[in-house]
Image: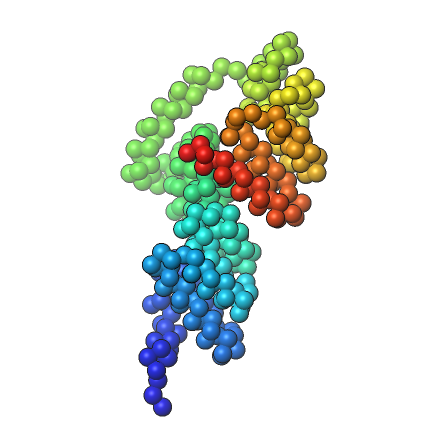
Length: 314
């Protein structure tokens, strides 16, 4: 019996699946009934072909059909996430990558991809969390973490990691050059850092000014208990200052008091006037609250509002 051309290439692919994937792709599994498996393969290959010619919408349509035939397949979720990232639809890209990691939590390629999503959407805090997980798998990836710390203005953490890498003789040429620029910024930061938390608290007790309160609640050294206390003070003294509601909600979210955080954010956002960045921060915090409550639709809606506002500032 002669094989058709399609059957020949299908068998060739199954015999050597690596030939059909790039380095950061995940081979698909074959534990489906034969008819469904062939449909699955057909849609999956079409998706790869359409992605290669930048036709991401058609690629996604084919991948969704794969997802119907075999729900929660890591390779399909990964490809969906990659296509959404190429379309700069960061929320969907994140959603599918996270879903894939729930199935394969230590998948290096998905972790690396999720890190790219967070970088592309300027979510550096989350990118740092992912990079730390990548380092557990591949310790040689510490260099990226140094740059992420620096980008996030976490200079002490960047310095600590730099020193550790230097002691281990693991400074790359890029890090050697970076180190020179880095210490200049450290010196500048030390020169302008004149007020500490206790000084600011004493000053606030004296002047009760909004500017002093703002400095207190934004200091990196403040504890969440102090943040909650002083943001509550701020609500009493400055009930029309949107920023105080935001900081109070941050403290409430950290205390797992999500319903109260939503209430404060809903009240405070009415006081935001012509400040896209501040308004975006409100929606981002609302997304956290709703996400923790398991209200994914509300979380995504608020994330989208925040992203739209951030893009206006670009």
